Image 1 (cartoon, rainbow, N blue to C red):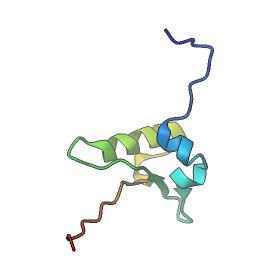
Image 2: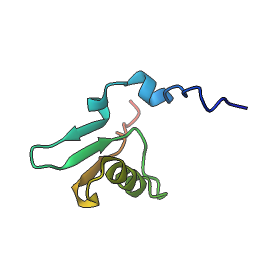
Image 3: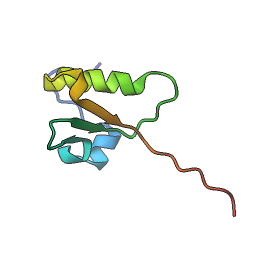
Image 4: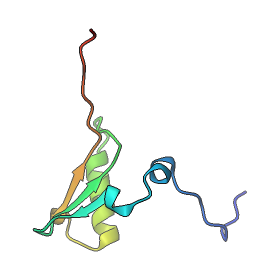
Length: 77
């Protein structure tokens, strides 16, 4: 059983990229860009991350833009 008084470690993605500006950017027009290494496969991850970000930052959902992982398909050589 885990000790609630002991802080949990960083997740693997956050441990590899601990700088906040890697994950969150505020554009000059007020839009907040949230970046994630997750991919949308029909499970609603873009919507979930946008809602969590808006709630955590206490801003309107319309100000949030989520950038998901980008996969580039390459033809075999």
